[in-house]
Image (cartoon, rainbow, N blue to C red; front, side):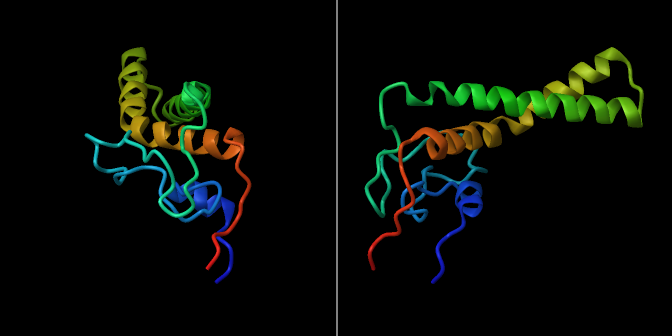
Length: 125
């Protein structure tokens, strides 16, 4: 079986070391538990919290994702509808709330893959 692509592993929320174990305990659409993470990988045992406060940096990744969302939604509204200022605030606010679970997870997954200190090592068969 070929090795799992990095982009696929990030999109699916898989371990940065083995790319098989799930980082999060529940599916994204379980909105009451979307933020609960596994302590370690069920396949290779890699810790998903390398040090206390590790995910503080993921807040900046989430901020960047939200800025992109605000710009895309704002420009789309401007060029398609030319709405009033109140409509901008409401639509962009709703988009931010709607994308919060997705951006929360994506920012943590990206931060763990970029700065977690793990290199891809497929598990032994």
